[in-house]
Structures are given as C-alpha cells and as structure tokens.
Image 1: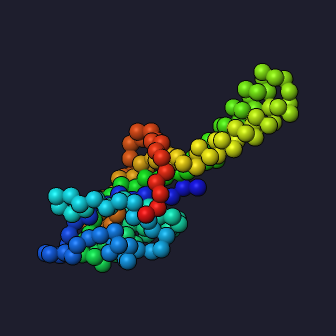
Image 2: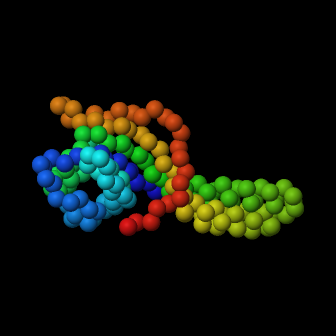
Image 3: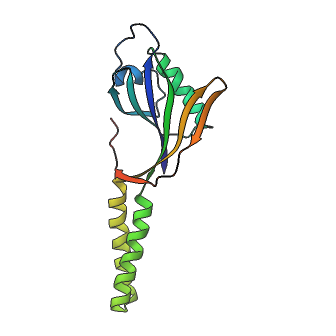
Length: 166
C-alpha cells in the first residue's frame, strides 16, 4: 500500500493571518488527509501532509490542499510530492525466502524449510509493518498556466520508521 505525501511551504496571504495550528488546518481538509507536521518558519510554515486515498491526479490533490490552506489565510506556490510505501509485503517475502533457503539448503528437509519460510515470512511482515520507503517523485511550482510538476532527480529511496497518525 502507498500514500502520497505533500510538503508545502505555506505563506500568509493576509496582512495579519490567524494563528495556524494543525487543528485549524484539519478543519478545512478532507477526512482522509493526515497532517504529519506543521513547523513555523521565519515567514510562514512548513506542512507535511499525507493523503490516504488516491485522487484523480496530483493536480487535483494540490488544488484541494490550496483551497484548504487559503481557508485559514495561507497559500503555497512550492511543494514536494513523495510516494510513501509500506514495506510489510516486501519484508515478508524477503524473510520467507531467506528462511526457507537457509534451512532448506542446510537440512535438506522440505518440511523444515517450509516451517522456516513461514517463520521468516511472519518476522518479515512484523518488521516491515514498522517501516516505510520514501521516494521524492515531483517538485512542484505554481505558474500562470497552473501547477508545474517537475520530476525529481532520482536520488534513491529512504527507509524510515513508520509514523503514527496524530
């Protein structure tokens, strides 16, 4: 399973905007949107937001997020989109293959290899459930013609511990 995360550089559009909190922003967002962090910066805020359900396009998601932040007196013209994938299945397969291969080749016993593969699968599933693979896929800029999604240079993926929803 995967979600898309949006890192938004929020700037005030009002002369004296109201105080921005995760709660005030959440009131304007859909129920499947999770605010991972909201950090105050010298001018504005940096918001990390995950969308749990796929939208038709990233442009649709960006427009939805823009309308929400405008509702609290902010806007953004730059963003970064990352794909966050849960590693449970990947780790389960790796653990199962490793367990079956190691025990099967050393014992020459098919039943022991099956049981070791099953145990490896379970351990891999548990370990992978607590990890995420994060890959930056787009850098986003607002232009007069609309959103411009620039494919990010592939710098590899980062594995991090899974975050709990706030």
